Image 1 (cartoon, rainbow, N blue to C red):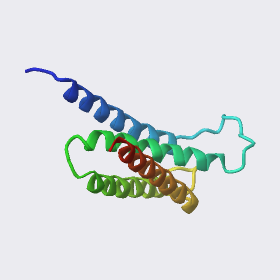
Image 2: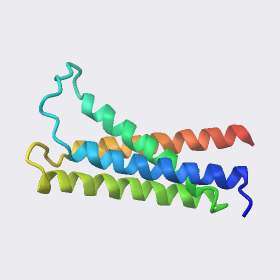
Image 3: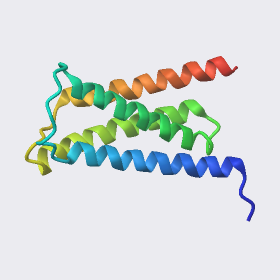
Length: 128
C-alpha cells in the first residue's frame, strides 16, 4: 500500500481533530481549583472562543478532503461545534460540582466557530 502526502496529511488532520475534541472535553469537565485566578474579565470566554475556533478549523481541514462542497462541510461542522458546545455545557451542569452550565459559554463557542468559518471563507476567496 502506497502512502501519499495527501493521505498522510488527511490522517494527521483526523488525529489532530479527534485529539483536540477530547482535550476540549477534558478541560471543560476537569476541576481546576488550584489554578490561580486570572484578573481579566471574561477570560474564560476567550478560552471558549479559541476552543471552538480550533475545533472548527481542524475538522474542516480533515473533512474538506472527503467532500468537494466546502459550504456543505462548513455548515455541518458549524452545527457539530454548536451541538458539541451545548452537550459539554449540559455535562458540566449535570456531572461536575465545580462547573455550571452557562449560556454565555455557548455564545462564546458559537462565536469561535463563526470566526473560524469567516477565516476559512476569506482564505478560500484569496486562493481563487
